[in-house]
Length: 572
Image (tube, rainbow, N blue to C red; front, side, top):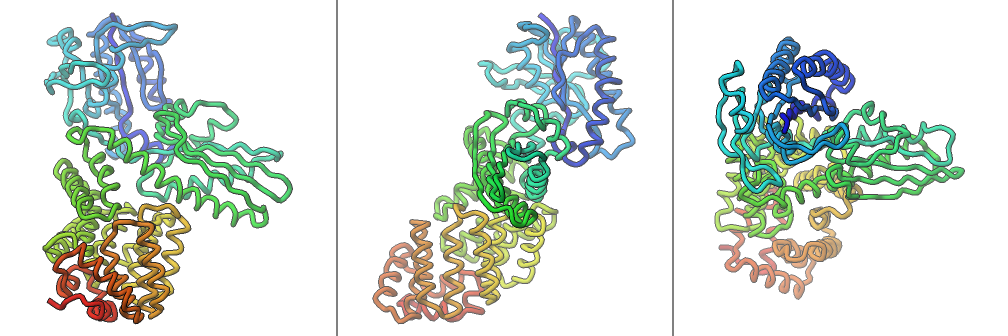
């Protein structure tokens, strides 16, 4: 029976990414000047530190609680002159229970309980179990407030929790949602130096740092693992990363082979791997190209992993971030019922976290899809909802590139302000030049403005970055529309058919096929496409098409509507 104290540094991943050297230096002082002496003076011992936290045990629950309070008070005084965002502050959990000692370490359910309580502790405060509270009530100089029962992973029954401090995290809520990734030094085989490998790692780290949905651990932190054999999960624990990138480089003469892997620091499983074979002609061009391709592949792989983790949680228990991630697979399927489910999940995320700008931006895009692809009977209302969400999200989006892309998509699909949409996309791509969705939407935006060459170039860039993208069929439809504007209808028809093959069930595209076939004078094919379109959208009229589709299709691209009339779509 012992008292366990589990502590973790709040917002560690963000802090270490923003000022790696400064945070590590400050943490050395915290361990040596604050934690170690206070624990020792209270009769306890630090069992281990984990980079951003520590585990300690005490024979006396009262001394353990007093020590935890002293640590928090000392930290508050020490960090008081810094901006709140940059302060080092702990969350601390305390529990009294049985443990199993193995060497200098301890294990058991009691350790898990203390760690779970730490996770919901207020920043700068404490969270303790009922067993702990009963021992210290009236004997420590602090107010204890009940937060009710808390479910603890791997334990069948919930436990009562009590806190000292304000701002308790409700069970199931997260503060840090951006997944952290670290790029470890690559092994270089067949070379006396590692300058090329270090250059590749620097370029990949830099490329990933521009991805808004990923927090990249600083290069200097990763360097401590150079030449060291370490298990992936150990790397994750030590650096606070959820994902780890590893690789190797082999050089033989002027030929070079680069192998890169992405692994989960949670499970150790390999999530993605790729091999690049090339000539070592232009060193810097090769580094840039490989870094761009790796970043372009790793970002969606991490997103897929985050989606899988979110969907593993029961819908009723999902946090706002998990609801946001869960919406993506529904959003990109391009089906009426799937898009409605995406809107539902995003609306739940917004209800749970009213400041969730990411969910609001993506919902704006989903509403724009609902209007554009004729998925309800009130397209003008969907268009209005898309614009309202986009305008609200734009006020607080800051530098989150995916949200900038979503807002631009909503504006471009529901209005004629393509200059503003273009500015948002340029800003998004300056932040994350490897965003395939950003390039896709830039392609569409250029097509809306009748800049065909720029539109096609953007679609090509999107495909190069993400050749297996869930929106790949939309790359083809974008190219098809550009060819239609250029009156190259035969090529437009070929591309629409490729898109329909890549996205089976995306029946709204028969609208494009019918128009292009009619404009090409291919009457039988136009009739067949129009029949498929009317079967999917009974009672469809030109008026409904005009109310639904991006205004550019009838305000600037009259040929498209004329083609639908020729294909037999009734006027009203």
